[in-house]
Length: 115
Image (cartoon, rainbow, N blue to C red; front, side, top):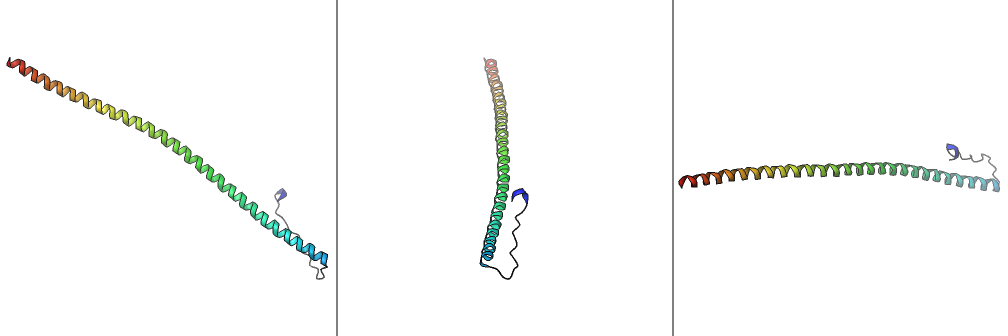
């Protein structure tokens, strides 16, 4: 399709007296027209396929970006939860130590009181 214009086949001759050469030219022209139609159809399919592939590539890129963002967010959340869990364990350990200290202090105080 040079110049963006669709192919315009040459109409067959309407002469009722077709000579042998004219018939062969018309038959050849019809074959060329048929091949041109097939080629135009094939070119259109290739263009449509290219459009679809471009769309699929764009979606794949978007999915990759989303996956990267999800991974980063997941890692940040994991670190945050690890620290939160660690702080909770430290608080529990301090409470246990304080309770043990109070308990041991009471026992020591009672032992000294009896002596």
